[in-house]
Amino acid sequence: MPLPTALSRASVALAAALLTASALPAPADAAPAPSPSAGGADRSGAARWAVQPSSAKGPTGRNYFIYDLAPGSTLTDHVGITNLGDRPLTFDVYGTDAYTTADGAFALLPADRPATDVGSWIRFERRAWTVPPGERVDIPFRLAVPADATPGDHAGGVIGAVARARTTADGQRVLVDQRLAARVHLRVTGPVRPAVTVESVDVSYDNPVDPFAGGDLVVRYRVRNTGNVRVTGSGTVRVAGPFGWEQARTSPTDLPELLPGGTFTVTERITGVPPLLRLTAEVDLAATTTDTALPPVLRSAGVWAPPWVPLALLAVAGCWGGLRWWRRRRAPGDGGRATADDARPTVDGGQATVDAGPATA
Image (cartoon, rainbow, N blue to C red; front, side, top):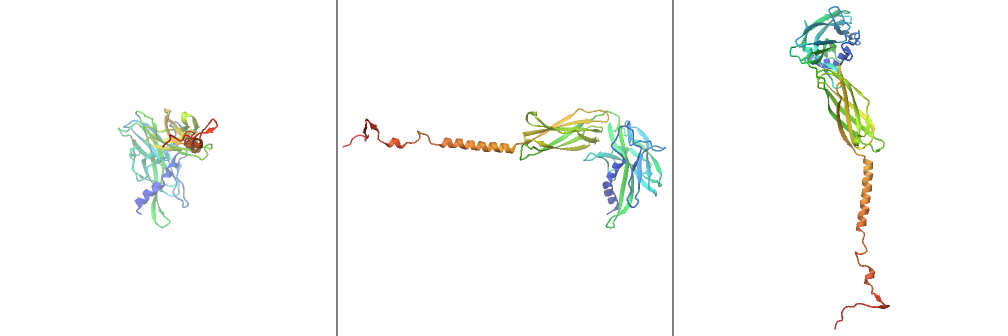
C-alpha cells in the first residue's frame, strides 16, 4: 500500500483523538480549564504532545480560539505546541474545518480533505515545525476573514499532527498520522438567524398480545440546525390516544451542540402504551443558542395500534350472532306448508262427510 494512502486511512481512523483536545465548547466568558490537550503514549514510548491556544509570551489559559470579527478583518494569534516526549518531534501545523457527526459529536475534517471555511482562512508561515523534547513553541498564525464571509458561526480547529512510520502485524510499513487540535469558534458579525427544524418523525408500535400490558412505542426524529449559529437544547415526546387523551410523556432529552447545517437523530422508546386504535406522538423541541432561547418547535406523527384481541372477540361474537339470526330466518313458519290436519275429513254434527265433487253419469 502506498504511504499516502496509508496516511489517509490512518488519519481517518485516528480522528477521534481530536476530541481529547477539549471538552464541549464553552461561552467566551466562561472560566477556562488551564490544562492543555496532550497526546497519549504507547508501549514503545510514542510521541506525546499538547496543543493549546497561546500567545507570543505563552499560554493565556483559553480553552478554545473564540473570535467575533467582521467580514474583511484580520488578526494574529498563536498556538502553543508542547513536546512532552524525550526526543525532537516535527509537527504538521495547519487549520481545518469542523462538522457535526451523525452521533452529534464535534469533529474535524480528515487530513485528506481540504478546508473550505474557517480552516482555509488560517495561514501559518510554514506547516512543518520542530519542537525539542520538553519544550513548547508558540507558533503565530494569521486569520483573515473574507470580505464576503457569511454572518454567523464558523467552526474549525488548529491541528498539530505527527506522522510516524509503523510496522503492521504482517510486516508492512505504514505512515500513521496522529493529530491533536484546539478548537476555533468564529462568529462573523452580521444578521444572526438562529433556527432549528424537526425534519422527520417516524413512529412504530409493537402491538402486544395482552392489550392490558401495553406495547412499546418507538419514536425517531431528526433535528437539523437550519440557522447560521450554533444551537443546543432538549426535546420531549408526548404520546396521545384518540381525542388527545395523553398516554405518556418522556423526560427531556438533551441535544448535542449542532453546528450550522448539522443534524442529530433522537430515538425514544416508550413502554406500556396501550393499543388504542390510533396513537399520536408529538415532538416538542426547545432549542437555545449561546445567547437566547428559541420558540418551541412542534411536529407529530401517528401510527395505527388496533387492539387485536378485543377486536377478535368482537368479531367472533358478531359472527355467532349473525349465524343465529340467519338460522332463525331460515326456520319454517306455520303458514308456509300444508299439515296433516288439512288432509282429514271434516265432521259436521257427528256425521262424517266427504266432499267428493260433482256427480258424474
